[in-house]
Picture 1: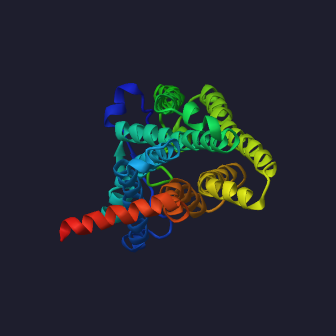
Picture 2: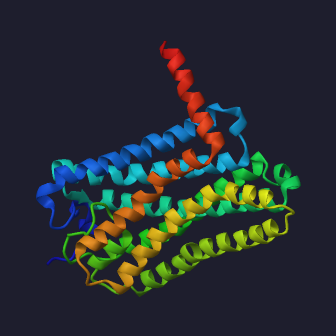
Picture 3: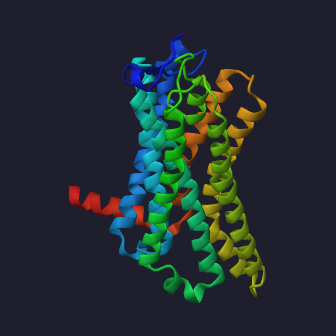
Length: 317
């Protein structure tokens, strides 16, 4: 097979894969996918609308929640076009440029999800361990700087890996193993030395995928220590209940992430269907589950949603 270099990349394309072994049923499989994407888009858009329209929710906790909803929305809209056009129209080709753009947005939003959850754990730590200084520490200016730092951190983390990958020749099969482009999928098609890419990927894993959850665990260790020092069980329960939504969101991100990593590491020869299912769970679970978790477990968000829809019903009348 001919080697694809930078001079021929303009006409180069990749071939996406749907659900292996169930190609004839793609139109039926599209129904649950369509439902999940709809839940994610409607749920996260509703959360953003509620936080924007309710002045009582213009607080640090809910501003961080709006960042999480924006990230989930971005991740959903990044994978939706290729997944649904493959399932509905069986369009499997994706150009070199479009594939690299999708890789950039998928990995950037995935890292942003982790970074925002880390920022939210800091918010919970300040709220519980230093409640008297909460408003003075997490000012609007500080939250804006945290948001800017998250964006810069994730973009600067992803861009070098794309530049390192783009300089390499592709000379193997065009066939990808998912219905969207992932960096670990593209690197398999390279026919050159990828040691620099591998070392950078390892550094990236340590910087974000390992460091973020460790810092989240550390913040909850301080929170737990503070909670156990409170006088009554009622106060302890109230403090833990305030953290429950965030804990569930953390589990919703990192459990599928660990599952995907374990599958790639220890089950390389497993059925392709296993890898596809794990990857789809990893990318779809957080954007779908987070708005449900915060709508059900956070009373202020629930009241805000009821207020938003009651105002719209009044307008319709």
